[in-house]
Amino acid sequence: MSTLPTKKTLRTTHTEAIYQDHMFHNPEAPCHLDNIDPSKIIKEWDDCLISENDFPYDGVFTTSHVFSLKLHTADSLLLYVARTRIEVAEYIDNNYDYILENTKSGQSIPDHTHIHLLNR
Image 1: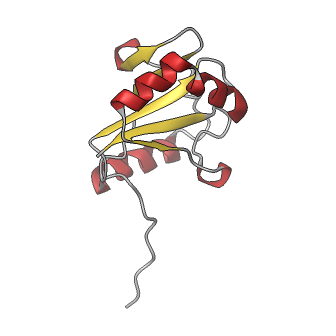
Image 2: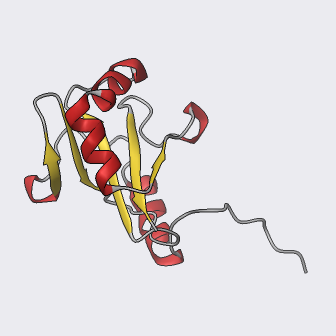
């Protein structure tokens, strides 16, 4: 009897199942980064914000937030410019241990550039 290989994930089995169910049942859903529930916003600036990750990397990290532009774009340069502004960079440096940015092949939201801010 053989077993199928499983995809490695940073999420717990439970959170990964919820994420996969969401992706399966909502393939055409609008980008959730465009309409973030205000109660999930951690920190906000004029053009960008940090919010809770709807599907956190809770298998490895205790904190799993998302940094994104308010503008819907796939332009990673704009995200880089926002992230490196002094007040944003200082906030990220003082509050997070890791920054994770998926490559295009690993992005579940390829049309809205974002990075993950994580703590162990």
